[in-house]
Image (tube, rainbow, N blue to C red; front, side, top):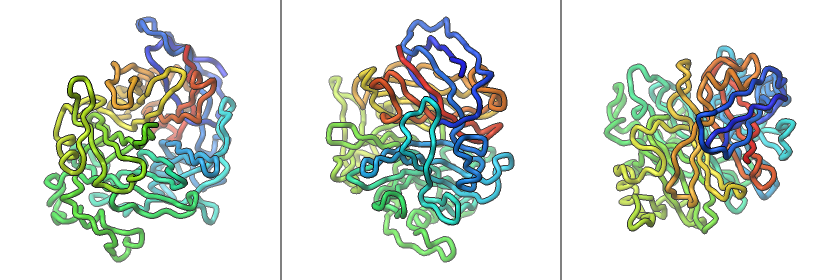
Length: 435
Protein backbone atom coordinates (compact mmCIF):
# COMPACT_ATOMS: atom_id res chain seq x y z
CA UNK A 1 0.00 0.00 0.00
CA UNK A 2 1.36 3.39 -0.91
CA UNK A 3 0.52 6.23 1.36
CA UNK A 4 -1.34 9.30 0.19
CA UNK A 5 -0.17 12.12 2.44
CA UNK A 6 -2.42 15.14 2.76
CA UNK A 7 -1.81 18.37 4.55
CA UNK A 8 -5.50 19.14 4.42
CA UNK A 9 -7.46 21.26 6.76
CA UNK A 10 -9.80 19.25 8.62
CA UNK A 11 -10.30 15.55 8.40
CA UNK A 12 -11.52 12.58 6.73
CA UNK A 13 -12.57 10.65 3.78
CA UNK A 14 -12.93 7.04 3.20
CA UNK A 15 -14.71 4.05 2.07
CA UNK A 16 -15.18 0.51 3.22
CA UNK A 17 -12.64 -2.19 2.54
CA UNK A 18 -11.65 -5.04 0.34
CA UNK A 19 -8.75 -6.19 -1.73
CA UNK A 20 -8.18 -4.79 -5.13
CA UNK A 21 -4.40 -4.24 -5.01
CA UNK A 22 -3.13 -0.94 -3.76
CA UNK A 23 -0.58 -0.34 -6.47
CA UNK A 24 -0.64 2.89 -8.40
CA UNK A 25 -1.56 5.14 -5.48
CA UNK A 26 0.27 8.44 -5.90
CA UNK A 27 0.85 11.18 -3.31
CA UNK A 28 -0.58 14.65 -3.58
CA UNK A 29 0.31 17.56 -1.32
CA UNK A 30 -2.03 20.39 -0.36
CA UNK A 31 0.55 23.11 0.14
CA UNK A 32 -2.01 25.89 0.06
CA UNK A 33 -3.79 24.71 3.21
CA UNK A 34 -2.75 26.31 6.47
CA UNK A 35 -4.34 23.73 8.76
CA UNK A 36 -2.62 20.38 9.13
CA UNK A 37 -5.03 18.31 11.18
CA UNK A 38 -4.98 15.38 8.78
CA UNK A 39 -1.72 13.51 8.44
CA UNK A 40 -2.57 10.99 5.74
CA UNK A 41 -5.24 9.27 3.66
CA UNK A 42 -4.61 5.72 2.46
CA UNK A 43 -6.44 3.68 -0.11
CA UNK A 44 -7.40 0.32 1.44
CA UNK A 45 -9.51 -1.32 -1.26
CA UNK A 46 -12.87 -2.27 -2.65
CA UNK A 47 -15.44 -3.68 -0.26
CA UNK A 48 -18.08 -4.68 -2.83
CA UNK A 49 -17.97 -6.22 -6.28
CA UNK A 50 -16.56 -9.53 -7.47
CA UNK A 51 -13.02 -8.07 -7.45
CA UNK A 52 -13.23 -7.36 -3.74
CA UNK A 53 -12.33 -9.82 -1.00
CA UNK A 54 -16.07 -10.16 -0.36
CA UNK A 55 -16.83 -11.46 -3.90
CA UNK A 56 -20.35 -10.11 -3.67
CA UNK A 57 -21.45 -11.60 -6.98
CA UNK A 58 -20.57 -15.11 -5.83
CA UNK A 59 -21.85 -14.68 -2.28
CA UNK A 60 -24.79 -12.28 -2.56
CA UNK A 61 -25.64 -12.15 -6.28
CA UNK A 62 -24.62 -8.60 -6.97
CA UNK A 63 -21.62 -7.25 -8.79
CA UNK A 64 -22.39 -3.56 -8.43
CA UNK A 65 -23.81 -1.31 -5.72
CA UNK A 66 -23.09 2.00 -3.96
CA UNK A 67 -23.11 3.77 -0.60
CA UNK A 68 -22.27 1.65 2.46
CA UNK A 69 -23.85 3.22 5.55
CA UNK A 70 -22.68 1.54 8.78
CA UNK A 71 -25.12 0.98 11.66
CA UNK A 72 -23.89 -0.80 14.79
CA UNK A 73 -26.14 -3.27 16.63
CA UNK A 74 -24.97 -3.63 20.24
CA UNK A 75 -27.25 -6.64 20.80
CA UNK A 76 -25.14 -8.96 18.63
CA UNK A 77 -21.98 -6.86 18.20
CA UNK A 78 -22.61 -6.63 14.46
CA UNK A 79 -22.26 -3.80 11.96
CA UNK A 80 -25.07 -3.57 9.43
CA UNK A 81 -23.91 -1.84 6.26
CA UNK A 82 -26.66 -0.48 3.99
CA UNK A 83 -26.16 -0.11 0.24
CA UNK A 84 -28.23 1.60 -2.46
CA UNK A 85 -29.32 0.52 -5.94
CA UNK A 86 -27.86 -2.95 -6.44
CA UNK A 87 -27.37 -4.96 -9.64
CA UNK A 88 -25.93 -8.23 -10.85
CA UNK A 89 -23.99 -6.49 -13.64
CA UNK A 90 -22.26 -3.21 -12.68
CA UNK A 91 -21.34 -2.35 -16.28
CA UNK A 92 -24.97 -2.18 -17.44
CA UNK A 93 -26.61 -1.63 -14.02
CA UNK A 94 -28.94 -4.49 -14.77
CA UNK A 95 -29.95 -7.91 -13.53
CA UNK A 96 -31.58 -8.78 -10.21
CA UNK A 97 -32.25 -5.11 -9.47
CA UNK A 98 -32.69 -4.37 -5.77
CA UNK A 99 -33.23 -0.84 -4.50
CA UNK A 100 -31.26 -1.53 -1.32
CA UNK A 101 -29.42 -4.36 0.42
CA UNK A 102 -27.68 -4.88 3.75
CA UNK A 103 -24.46 -6.80 4.45
CA UNK A 104 -23.25 -7.62 7.96
CA UNK A 105 -19.84 -7.90 9.60
CA UNK A 106 -18.12 -8.40 12.96
CA UNK A 107 -14.81 -7.29 11.47
CA UNK A 108 -13.50 -4.16 13.20
CA UNK A 109 -9.81 -4.49 12.32
CA UNK A 110 -9.98 -2.71 9.00
CA UNK A 111 -6.34 -1.97 8.20
CA UNK A 112 -6.23 -5.01 5.92
CA UNK A 113 -9.73 -4.57 4.56
CA UNK A 114 -13.30 -5.25 5.59
CA UNK A 115 -14.75 -8.74 5.46
CA UNK A 116 -18.51 -9.28 5.41
CA UNK A 117 -19.97 -12.43 6.95
CA UNK A 118 -23.56 -12.32 5.69
CA UNK A 119 -26.55 -10.41 4.35
CA UNK A 120 -29.94 -9.68 5.84
CA UNK A 121 -32.52 -10.45 4.65
CA UNK A 122 -30.94 -13.34 2.74
CA UNK A 123 -32.52 -16.12 0.70
CA UNK A 124 -31.58 -18.36 -2.23
CA UNK A 125 -27.99 -17.13 -2.11
CA UNK A 126 -29.08 -13.52 -2.60
CA UNK A 127 -29.08 -10.36 -0.50
CA UNK A 128 -32.71 -9.22 -0.49
CA UNK A 129 -34.34 -5.79 -0.45
CA UNK A 130 -35.29 -4.25 2.88
CA UNK A 131 -37.52 -1.42 1.66
CA UNK A 132 -39.26 -2.76 -1.44
CA UNK A 133 -39.74 -0.14 -4.15
CA UNK A 134 -42.24 0.01 -7.00
CA UNK A 135 -39.28 0.54 -9.38
CA UNK A 136 -41.63 2.51 -11.62
CA UNK A 137 -40.22 5.72 -13.10
CA UNK A 138 -42.26 8.91 -12.53
CA UNK A 139 -43.95 7.28 -9.56
CA UNK A 140 -41.40 5.50 -7.35
CA UNK A 141 -38.19 4.57 -9.10
CA UNK A 142 -36.34 3.38 -6.01
CA UNK A 143 -35.89 3.57 -2.24
CA UNK A 144 -32.36 4.53 -1.17
CA UNK A 145 -30.95 4.22 2.39
CA UNK A 146 -29.81 7.47 4.01
CA UNK A 147 -28.93 6.45 7.56
CA UNK A 148 -29.77 4.15 10.44
CA UNK A 149 -29.54 3.56 14.15
CA UNK A 150 -30.09 0.88 16.80
CA UNK A 151 -32.19 1.81 19.83
CA UNK A 152 -32.73 -0.71 22.64
CA UNK A 153 -32.26 -3.65 20.31
CA UNK A 154 -34.41 -2.33 17.45
CA UNK A 155 -32.69 -1.53 14.17
CA UNK A 156 -33.94 1.40 12.09
CA UNK A 157 -33.10 2.21 8.48
CA UNK A 158 -34.12 5.54 6.96
CA UNK A 159 -34.57 5.84 3.20
CA UNK A 160 -35.91 8.21 0.56
CA UNK A 161 -38.52 7.33 -2.02
CA UNK A 162 -37.32 8.64 -5.39
CA UNK A 163 -39.88 9.86 -7.92
CA UNK A 164 -37.39 9.72 -10.81
CA UNK A 165 -33.69 10.14 -11.56
CA UNK A 166 -34.67 12.30 -14.54
CA UNK A 167 -33.01 15.71 -14.08
CA UNK A 168 -33.44 16.89 -17.66
CA UNK A 169 -37.11 17.78 -17.38
CA UNK A 170 -37.48 18.40 -13.62
CA UNK A 171 -35.44 19.91 -10.83
CA UNK A 172 -34.07 17.90 -7.93
CA UNK A 173 -36.71 19.21 -5.54
CA UNK A 174 -39.48 17.73 -7.67
CA UNK A 175 -37.73 14.37 -7.87
CA UNK A 176 -38.26 13.39 -4.22
CA UNK A 177 -41.39 11.64 -2.91
CA UNK A 178 -40.85 11.24 0.82
CA UNK A 179 -38.45 10.06 3.49
CA UNK A 180 -39.48 6.94 5.39
CA UNK A 181 -38.20 4.45 7.95
CA UNK A 182 -38.05 0.66 8.30
CA UNK A 183 -37.40 -1.23 11.54
CA UNK A 184 -36.34 -4.72 12.58
CA UNK A 185 -36.80 -6.29 16.00
CA UNK A 186 -35.11 -9.59 15.05
CA UNK A 187 -31.60 -8.40 14.15
CA UNK A 188 -32.44 -7.68 10.52
CA UNK A 189 -34.15 -10.94 9.54
CA UNK A 190 -37.45 -9.17 8.87
CA UNK A 191 -38.35 -5.51 8.46
CA UNK A 192 -41.52 -3.44 8.70
CA UNK A 193 -42.44 0.15 7.95
CA UNK A 194 -42.69 2.72 10.75
CA UNK A 195 -45.42 4.76 9.10
CA UNK A 196 -45.39 7.64 11.55
CA UNK A 197 -41.74 8.36 10.70
CA UNK A 198 -42.56 9.88 7.32
CA UNK A 199 -41.51 13.28 6.01
CA UNK A 200 -43.09 14.06 2.62
CA UNK A 201 -42.19 16.43 -0.18
CA UNK A 202 -44.32 19.56 -0.54
CA UNK A 203 -47.82 18.78 -1.73
CA UNK A 204 -47.93 21.56 -4.29
CA UNK A 205 -44.82 20.28 -6.03
CA UNK A 206 -46.22 16.80 -6.55
CA UNK A 207 -49.89 17.49 -7.18
CA UNK A 208 -50.73 16.72 -10.79
CA UNK A 209 -47.07 16.35 -11.72
CA UNK A 210 -46.70 14.58 -15.07
CA UNK A 211 -50.39 13.86 -15.23
CA UNK A 212 -50.56 11.88 -12.01
CA UNK A 213 -53.53 12.56 -9.72
CA UNK A 214 -52.89 15.10 -6.98
CA UNK A 215 -53.50 12.50 -4.28
CA UNK A 216 -50.87 10.10 -5.61
CA UNK A 217 -48.22 10.98 -3.02
CA UNK A 218 -50.56 10.43 -0.08
CA UNK A 219 -51.57 7.13 -1.65
CA UNK A 220 -47.93 6.18 -2.17
CA UNK A 221 -46.77 6.77 1.40
CA UNK A 222 -49.58 4.58 2.73
CA UNK A 223 -48.70 1.54 0.63
CA UNK A 224 -47.55 -1.60 2.36
CA UNK A 225 -44.93 -4.18 1.34
CA UNK A 226 -47.64 -6.36 -0.27
CA UNK A 227 -49.13 -3.48 -2.19
CA UNK A 228 -47.21 -3.71 -5.41
CA UNK A 229 -49.68 -5.96 -7.12
CA UNK A 230 -52.91 -4.53 -5.77
CA UNK A 231 -51.96 -1.14 -4.32
CA UNK A 232 -53.17 -2.14 -0.88
CA UNK A 233 -53.23 0.82 1.51
CA UNK A 234 -52.25 -0.26 5.01
CA UNK A 235 -50.85 2.99 6.38
CA UNK A 236 -53.06 5.75 7.75
CA UNK A 237 -51.01 8.92 7.33
CA UNK A 238 -52.45 12.28 6.40
CA UNK A 239 -49.97 13.83 4.03
CA UNK A 240 -50.75 17.40 5.07
CA UNK A 241 -49.52 16.58 8.60
CA UNK A 242 -46.22 15.08 7.42
CA UNK A 243 -44.89 17.60 4.91
CA UNK A 244 -41.24 18.20 5.73
CA UNK A 245 -39.23 18.65 2.57
CA UNK A 246 -35.85 19.11 4.29
CA UNK A 247 -36.23 15.78 6.10
CA UNK A 248 -36.88 13.56 3.10
CA UNK A 249 -33.28 12.31 3.56
CA UNK A 250 -32.45 11.59 7.21
CA UNK A 251 -29.27 10.50 8.98
CA UNK A 252 -29.98 9.77 12.69
CA UNK A 253 -27.36 9.88 15.44
CA UNK A 254 -27.41 9.47 19.22
CA UNK A 255 -26.54 12.86 20.69
CA UNK A 256 -25.36 11.29 23.96
CA UNK A 257 -27.65 13.68 25.83
CA UNK A 258 -30.91 11.71 25.88
CA UNK A 259 -31.87 12.83 22.38
CA UNK A 260 -31.68 11.18 18.98
CA UNK A 261 -30.83 13.84 16.40
CA UNK A 262 -31.87 13.68 12.75
CA UNK A 263 -29.82 15.54 10.15
CA UNK A 264 -32.03 16.10 7.10
CA UNK A 265 -31.66 17.11 3.46
CA UNK A 266 -34.23 18.09 0.86
CA UNK A 267 -33.75 17.87 -2.90
CA UNK A 268 -31.21 15.28 -3.91
CA UNK A 269 -27.73 16.87 -3.40
CA UNK A 270 -29.35 20.23 -4.00
CA UNK A 271 -29.51 22.20 -0.72
CA UNK A 272 -28.18 22.37 2.83
CA UNK A 273 -28.76 20.28 5.96
CA UNK A 274 -31.29 20.94 8.75
CA UNK A 275 -31.72 19.38 12.17
CA UNK A 276 -34.37 17.79 14.37
CA UNK A 277 -34.31 15.80 17.58
CA UNK A 278 -36.51 13.65 19.80
CA UNK A 279 -36.19 12.04 23.22
CA UNK A 280 -34.90 8.51 22.73
CA UNK A 281 -37.98 6.97 24.34
CA UNK A 282 -40.26 8.81 21.88
CA UNK A 283 -38.31 7.93 18.75
CA UNK A 284 -41.22 6.45 16.78
CA UNK A 285 -43.64 9.29 17.60
CA UNK A 286 -43.60 11.91 14.83
CA UNK A 287 -45.39 14.54 16.92
CA UNK A 288 -42.73 14.40 19.64
CA UNK A 289 -39.96 15.64 17.33
CA UNK A 290 -38.65 19.18 17.67
CA UNK A 291 -36.69 21.10 15.07
CA UNK A 292 -33.78 23.53 15.11
CA UNK A 293 -34.96 26.96 13.92
CA UNK A 294 -31.88 29.08 14.64
CA UNK A 295 -30.00 30.65 17.53
CA UNK A 296 -31.14 33.07 20.23
CA UNK A 297 -28.42 34.78 22.27
CA UNK A 298 -26.00 32.15 21.03
CA UNK A 299 -28.14 29.22 22.17
CA UNK A 300 -29.94 26.80 19.81
CA UNK A 301 -33.71 27.06 19.55
CA UNK A 302 -35.76 23.88 19.00
CA UNK A 303 -39.48 24.09 18.34
CA UNK A 304 -41.72 21.07 18.75
CA UNK A 305 -44.34 19.42 16.57
CA UNK A 306 -45.62 20.21 13.14
CA UNK A 307 -45.44 23.97 13.68
CA UNK A 308 -41.77 23.63 14.51
CA UNK A 309 -41.26 21.49 11.42
CA UNK A 310 -42.98 24.04 9.21
CA UNK A 311 -40.87 26.85 10.63
CA UNK A 312 -37.65 24.89 10.22
CA UNK A 313 -38.62 23.82 6.72
CA UNK A 314 -39.25 27.40 5.58
CA UNK A 315 -36.49 29.29 7.42
CA UNK A 316 -32.99 29.92 6.08
CA UNK A 317 -31.87 30.34 9.71
CA UNK A 318 -32.53 26.64 10.28
CA UNK A 319 -29.63 25.38 8.17
CA UNK A 320 -26.91 23.85 10.33
CA UNK A 321 -24.83 23.04 7.25
CA UNK A 322 -24.90 24.94 3.97
CA UNK A 323 -27.86 26.91 2.63
CA UNK A 324 -30.48 26.84 -0.11
CA UNK A 325 -27.60 26.61 -2.55
CA UNK A 326 -25.48 24.45 -0.28
CA UNK A 327 -25.38 21.38 -2.58
CA UNK A 328 -25.06 18.78 0.18
CA UNK A 329 -25.54 15.05 -0.29
CA UNK A 330 -24.97 11.70 1.43
CA UNK A 331 -24.15 13.26 4.77
CA UNK A 332 -22.70 11.27 7.67
CA UNK A 333 -22.23 12.32 11.31
CA UNK A 334 -20.25 11.01 14.27
CA UNK A 335 -18.41 12.18 17.38
CA UNK A 336 -14.62 11.83 17.26
CA UNK A 337 -13.13 11.57 20.79
CA UNK A 338 -9.59 12.16 19.53
CA UNK A 339 -10.60 15.49 17.99
CA UNK A 340 -13.22 16.09 20.69
CA UNK A 341 -15.49 17.30 17.91
CA UNK A 342 -18.68 16.34 16.12
CA UNK A 343 -17.82 15.82 12.46
CA UNK A 344 -20.05 15.89 9.38
CA UNK A 345 -18.98 14.70 5.95
CA UNK A 346 -20.92 15.10 2.71
CA UNK A 347 -20.59 15.49 -1.02
CA UNK A 348 -20.87 18.93 -2.59
CA UNK A 349 -22.77 18.90 -5.86
CA UNK A 350 -23.51 15.97 -8.13
CA UNK A 351 -21.10 13.10 -8.80
CA UNK A 352 -20.79 13.15 -12.58
CA UNK A 353 -18.18 13.29 -15.32
CA UNK A 354 -17.56 17.00 -14.84
CA UNK A 355 -15.46 16.08 -11.83
CA UNK A 356 -16.64 19.15 -9.90
CA UNK A 357 -18.08 17.32 -6.91
CA UNK A 358 -15.98 16.85 -3.81
CA UNK A 359 -16.29 15.28 -0.38
CA UNK A 360 -15.91 17.80 2.42
CA UNK A 361 -15.85 17.84 6.21
CA UNK A 362 -16.97 20.26 8.89
CA UNK A 363 -16.59 20.07 12.67
CA UNK A 364 -18.33 21.56 15.71
CA UNK A 365 -18.01 21.45 19.48
CA UNK A 366 -21.74 20.79 19.81
CA UNK A 367 -23.87 18.50 17.69
CA UNK A 368 -26.13 21.40 16.68
CA UNK A 369 -23.21 23.56 15.63
CA UNK A 370 -22.14 26.06 14.69
CA UNK A 371 -20.05 24.08 12.21
CA UNK A 372 -16.79 25.54 10.97
CA UNK A 373 -15.80 26.34 7.39
CA UNK A 374 -15.95 23.33 5.11
CA UNK A 375 -12.70 21.67 4.18
CA UNK A 376 -12.10 19.78 0.95
CA UNK A 377 -11.22 16.12 1.40
CA UNK A 378 -11.53 14.75 -2.12
CA UNK A 379 -11.78 17.08 -5.10
CA UNK A 380 -13.58 14.88 -7.60
CA UNK A 381 -11.82 13.12 -10.46
CA UNK A 382 -8.49 14.88 -9.97
CA UNK A 383 -7.97 13.39 -6.52
CA UNK A 384 -9.42 10.05 -7.57
CA UNK A 385 -6.72 9.79 -10.23
CA UNK A 386 -4.02 10.41 -7.62
CA UNK A 387 -5.38 8.29 -4.78
CA UNK A 388 -7.06 5.30 -6.40
CA UNK A 389 -5.37 2.51 -8.37
CA UNK A 390 -5.81 1.95 -12.07
CA UNK A 391 -9.30 0.80 -12.91
CA UNK A 392 -10.83 3.18 -10.38
CA UNK A 393 -9.47 6.49 -11.67
CA UNK A 394 -12.28 7.58 -13.93
CA UNK A 395 -14.94 9.72 -12.32
CA UNK A 396 -17.85 10.31 -9.98
CA UNK A 397 -16.75 10.02 -6.36
CA UNK A 398 -19.49 10.41 -3.75
CA UNK A 399 -20.67 9.32 -0.31
CA UNK A 400 -18.27 9.30 2.64
CA UNK A 401 -19.73 7.23 5.51
CA UNK A 402 -18.09 6.73 8.90
CA UNK A 403 -18.79 5.24 12.33
CA UNK A 404 -17.21 5.43 15.78
CA UNK A 405 -16.65 1.66 15.69
CA UNK A 406 -14.56 2.08 12.54
CA UNK A 407 -11.74 3.90 14.33
CA UNK A 408 -8.39 3.18 15.97
CA UNK A 409 -6.45 4.95 18.71
CA UNK A 410 -9.54 6.65 20.09
CA UNK A 411 -10.36 8.20 16.72
CA UNK A 412 -6.90 9.24 15.60
CA UNK A 413 -7.37 6.74 12.77
CA UNK A 414 -10.75 6.30 11.11
CA UNK A 415 -12.14 4.48 8.10
CA UNK A 416 -14.66 5.88 5.63
CA UNK A 417 -16.63 4.37 2.76
CA UNK A 418 -16.81 6.20 -0.57
CA UNK A 419 -18.64 5.24 -3.77
CA UNK A 420 -17.93 5.61 -7.48
CA UNK A 421 -20.67 5.75 -10.06
CA UNK A 422 -18.15 4.94 -12.78
CA UNK A 423 -16.26 3.05 -13.97
CA UNK A 424 -16.91 0.26 -11.47
CA UNK A 425 -20.09 1.24 -9.54
CA UNK A 426 -18.91 -0.07 -6.20
CA UNK A 427 -17.76 1.10 -2.78
CA UNK A 428 -14.22 1.54 -1.45
CA UNK A 429 -12.62 1.85 1.98
CA UNK A 430 -10.08 4.56 2.86
CA UNK A 431 -8.00 4.99 6.00
CA UNK A 432 -7.63 8.48 7.47
CA UNK A 433 -5.08 9.39 10.13
CA UNK A 434 -5.03 12.67 12.04
CA UNK A 435 -1.99 14.38 13.49
